[in-house]
Structure formats: C-alpha cells, structure tokens
Amino acid sequence: MRTKTLKKNRINVVTLGCSKNVYDSEVLMGQLKASGKDVVHEQEGNIVVINTCGFINNAKEESVNTILEYMQKKEAGDVDKVFVTGCLSERYKPDLEKEIPDVDQYFGTTELPGLLKALGADYKHELIGERLTTTPKNYAYLKIAEGCDRPCSFCAIPLMRGKHRSTPIEDLVTEAEKLAANGVKELILIAQDLTYYGLDLYKKRNLAELLEALVKVEDIEWIRLHYAFPTGFPMDVLDVMNREPKICNYLDIPLQHISDAILKSMRRGTTQAKTTKLLQEFRAKVPEMTIRTTLIVGYPGETEEDFQTLKQWVKDMRFERLGCFTYSHEENTHAYNLEDDVPEEVKIDRANQIMEIQSQISWELNQAKIGQEFKVTIDRKEGNYFVGRTEFDSPDVDNEVLIDASKTYLKTGEYTTVKITEAEDFDLYGEVIS
Image (tube, rainbow, N blue to C red; front, top):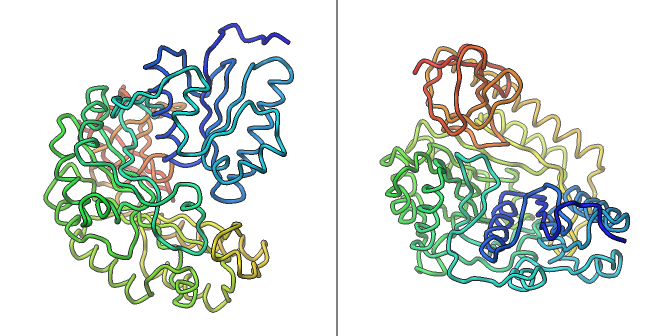
C-alpha cells in the first residue's frame, strides 16, 4: 500500500526518554543532514526512527506503545518504514524482534553507523560537534561521557550504555564552539556520571579542567552541571564554580536514599554521615549553590523506619530542587535478586509524602525571592506569558519565571533582569527591569 505522506523519503526522528537520548537523536539527525537526507524531529515523515528509553517500567511501556503506534501507521500505509534504536532495543532486542517482528530493523545504542547505513547514509567521523539541535535555540545539552562504571544495584544503565567513556576536552570545546556559533548561550553538561569524567582518558577526575576550557568559549553565558555522583566528587569543581561567573551555581546530584541500610543494599558506596558532610561542604564552599537531587522510595527491604529517616533528612536538608521516583524492579540488575516487597500503593504514597514536604520547602524558598532581582533566560512564550529561568533552574524539571507578555516583549534566548513580584510552589512571577 502506498503511503499517504506527501513528502517522500523524509526521515522523522522520534525521541523518548532522557536528555542523553535527546543528544543522541541530534547527533543522528546531524549525520543524516550531512548525507543530504531530509530529516525532521517529531513531525510527519514516511520513514520513522524511534529512539527508545529502557530505564524503568513506565519508560519501557511508553517506548513499546510508541513502536506499536507507528506499526499501526505502517500497516495503514501512513509510513513506509519504521526503525527502532536506543536503550530499549539495546536491552531487549531479541524479545522485540520476536514480539514486534514487522519493525524494519532494530539497533542498539552503539550501532549508529549501522542505522545510518540502513537509512542510506554514511557515518562521517569528521563531524565532531555537528548536530541538529531540537531544544530551544538558547540552550543545548553537551554529553561529556557515555556509559557508567558504578555498581548501583537498581540501575540498568551499564547494561544499555556500557562502561564509562569520556569524550576528549578538545572535542567538547569544538562542539561547544559550533553550538555557540549557532546561537546557543547555555550548555547543560550531561553524562551518566560527571564525577567520573576524565579518569579513563587522563587518569584523574578532570571535570574542573574541562570547565576551565569551556568557559573560554565566546558567547556561552551559562554552563550547568547535571548528574554528578556523590562518591569521589572532585571538589576543585567548586573552586571553578566560585571563580568563573559562567558556571551556574547549580548541581544535579542524584542521591537516591539516605538510610544506611538501603544505601548499602543499593551499593552506593556511601553513608548518611558522608553524604550529609558532602552537602555541608558544598554549601560552605558555594553558599549560593542550588542543589537538585532525586530519590527512590520503595526499594526492596525499605522499612517504615528507613522511610521515616529519609523523610526527616529531606526536611533537614531543605533541597532547592528535588524529584522522587518509585522503585522499578529491573531484570539483570543486582537488586532483581531481592524480593520487590514494598507494595505499589505504599511506594506511591511514600513518593507523594516526599513531594508534599518538598513542595512546602520550595514554597518557602520561593517566598524569600519576592523583591529580589535575577538574571533570566527566556525559553519560550506560552499563553499570556514569556517563560524563563534563572541560573538556579534547569529546563523541564525546575522552577520557571513567568513574565506578563502584555507588558513586555521578549525574544527567545534573550537574557534580561527580572524582579520577582509573586511566588508559588514551583513558579515565580516577575517584571522586567532591564
């Protein structure tokens, strides 16, 4: 059956999952464009590439449902070909080939050259930093490493992404320069583990040296750090953060839990005392720092006592930003050998309790910002508001600053000074003063 798509041989890349997948899709699209292909992101196209997530149950379900949705479109003649790549197909390729055999081809996370060949394109090694960015023009993700060497019991990422591999500093600087030339003002550094950066290439933790190199890139205004690991955190990074105004006073450091028994079972290599001391050192060295963390509740064996310990710690630490997830029992992980013994409804209730505490903390911290002035980057216009962020906020997950569009005209990517006039749990309202 002929497809109904008017534009023939247009490749539509569909991205699911985290910022690392966004980055991978952008690299794929850059390679396709360099080979002269007509490529779009999540628009109409008669050839579809689905970049899947396989991290936890909800993400896996979304990926499978998206594949099935496009297989129906293929059957109806609305698309010609469907290819699947990313973490889900890396982890479950044989199962997927058996269960959804009509997909044209499955590819893992390291099979970009093969995927490009299937799409009629050549992999070009020389395209360092060439990407088609899909984020708003003012910010872009910069993946500084791939894979992870950590032994966390609950995590399947090493199964899908392999061992830690750092990207050389000179390559990252080249990529940053190309992004800046295209109008990007904010770099969000991502990896499975920023803390480990450089150990494989330079035989030392080298994140600080990378930051020193990136701050020299002209036209980059903000550099933000995502996904650090608490064990072995290179404290010289904080010196660079204090010294260099381009480095946002912001750190995303997933801590997962705080009960010593749970941390030990999770194989996190730390304790409550060590973690609390580390955070106190962060606050002492960079008093202005915003710390974002994520927690897991309902891990196997988590008792009510463990949970109460976690709740009290969240109250005591008063994180500026916090997300909470329910434990997902993942095949082939170390924790899969444990009994998933916390009922789902208890997991959900515990997550809700944590987020209620955090909502109150966030509200109190935001109230203190009323009357203060902040440098704000504008991400988009939505309804009657321009929506922006301070240096203390990452896109999609953190607070936003809403500015009345009827009073002021702003451009996406513009930096402006805003005075905060009102504050809610997770939103700030402000007026432009310059």
